Image 1 (tube, helix red, strand yellow):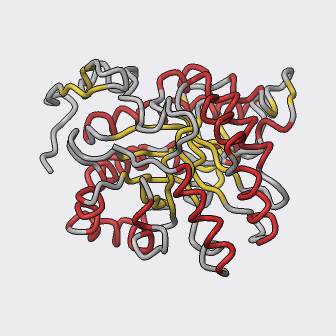
Image 2 (cartoon, helix red, strand yellow; image 1 turned 90 degrees about the vertical axis):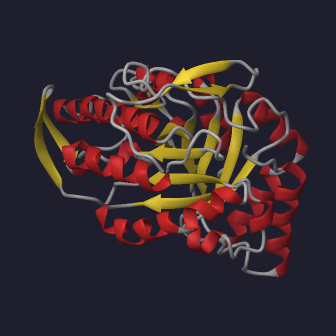
Length: 337
């Protein structure tokens, strides 16, 4: 893959879902021009299915051949060792077989919880996401995972569970230091999005939410679903929207609510689904409730285009669970393109 600087970037034309073309890749437009709409968006009753947690395990899944994308995770700079090796062989093979790659960037355990100085004032939370080092590492990720415009998409869910990164979670104005943290995190998101757009022509970038955020509302402090509105500016710049669904009891309502809220900004992905406590009964009940004609038709009409299982644990637990997964992918699945 040829690497170019922001200043020397060649302008490329990509088709959007309407068949029109758009220019991408210039430094001036990288962060503000939305990418081509992902395959699956606008197809009532169809979803691009993905599976994690790692590219080298996804291909061995019993449903691998039916997946539209393979999901993998970046948790800290320690991951570059094996990811650099993937760039030589595994990543090109995944693209060559027609699968999109979905990169989940989770930084809730990276760096330290600290107070750092920003242009907005003191900010309290995980320091690595706000650092220049993170933006340098973003360039490395774009080099490793990016493909040219003819390749299947590289979907990026950036800062998944972002609400947990400040010193106090889920509320914009919990303290001035939390507000400043979110402000700086938005700047970092726009900068990282620009890097991916400039260095990886097949990249599509989203901001990753925890799926619990829509369960309550506190407009005065920007808590609950009101927190999402404070990110309105960057959500409108994003190529698609992401949230996780990992409640231990039920995820049916979380998926519906978050899709309704985020769908007004563009295509929506369930970036990683799995009951957090590993409950097989919750997984079974969710699968049976979510993957019905009525439910899938409703959420795809609201904007949901993709659904990624966090791992194969439940798929391989027993024959009944595997059949549930296969039925969902077979009936509702579509390939990313």
